[in-house]
Amino acid sequence: MSSQKSLIEFIQMLIEQAPIEAVRSLERLDTEEAVRVLRELSPSSIARILPHLTTEIAGEAVRGLPNELLERVSGQVQPHQWAALFGMLPEDERQRIVQTLPEKIKDQVRELFEFPEDSAGQMMKTDFLAFLPHLKVKDAIKKIRSQAKRNVSPSYVYVVDEGRHLLGVITMRDLLLAKGEARLESIVQPDIFSVDAFMDREELANVLSGRRYFAVPVVDGEKRLLGVVRTEQLISGVTEEASEDILKMFGAGANERSFSPIGFSLRKRLPWLHVNLATAFLAASVVGFFEETIARITILAVFLPVVAGQGGNAGAQSLAVVMRGLVMREIPRDQVSSLIMKESLIGIVNGCIIGLVTAGVAWLWEGNPFLGLVIGLAMIVNLLAAGFSGAAIPIAMKSIGLDPAQSSSIILTTVTDVVGFLAFLGFAVVFQAHLV
Image 1: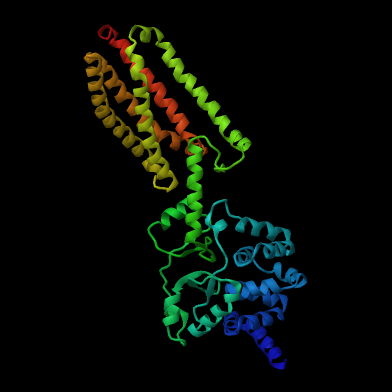
Image 2: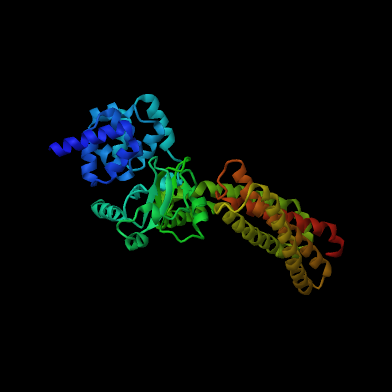
């Protein structure tokens, strides 16, 4: 008992005279003993040393502080320091601490720690291991063993400084092969890849696509370690989001599943079917405008779906490429016009080739070269429009704050149908003297 009291007095003295040495002294103790010592210190001493402790000790200490003591400590810890500590605590403990904070600090902590939906900060897990660089390898291994009961998965060991800034990473293999007396700073890999807590899930998947990591550390704006995102969790999330985008593209609900209730499916699908119906009538009105021409040259009705169908397919190809680029963050703002021009050029080239083939078929079918000319020219115009629209529609929707996956295909189909019908029947009117 006397030795415990002496230790507490020693740590108290170090905190007042050399806080960093106090941190190192606590680090040399077993976690449970370090936490017991910390809880016996004065509130001002706890507040002074808490932000500099490793995640393991700080998290355990905060969990065990009674509310009365926590209230006396909370107002003396800076908001950004509480936000960093929150990354180590389960939700119930966070809520308990928030209730003890002064209102001004409470609002600042919430602002710092509330991350956007589907961000790295919201996805991250807090069951990671982080130690100070001066800790010996044998002590780190001992601490890792003590964490087994907490179900911590130590693929990596992270090294942080007293301010919890990320310094590097150590693989379990390097740790186990190192000499027991060596310090972590001698085996740490300093060039570590990390991601900002506000990074979007899709962007995170993009930057990790060429790296083979089990997990990636998540940091705040000052490079303080907040948590880790595991690769398997990220893959699962991106796969789910991709399936939602596919459903949105075709007018189904993003959260609809194979065996969703019939009523739920109808509510998600019917509104977009009504939109599709309205656009179909728009395309039909174009055909109706040329009703007399079709009545005189009935063969035109045979080739109308050919022109519209090819435009729809070509547009869908462009749409798929651009949607993937948006999802994977491959399209810089200054390259948008270049992308649209590229897809338009592809549309023209495809139009010329497909138009030439279609013109030959129409000529052989009817024995009239002018019919081939009409449908060939219409194919060029429609595939140009398809390439341009397939690229421009999702980009335009994103630029005005709308979800680019939300039924882009319905809008695209309308464009290719209207342009295809208008081009084909318009050229037919121009050359009608040679078609009758």
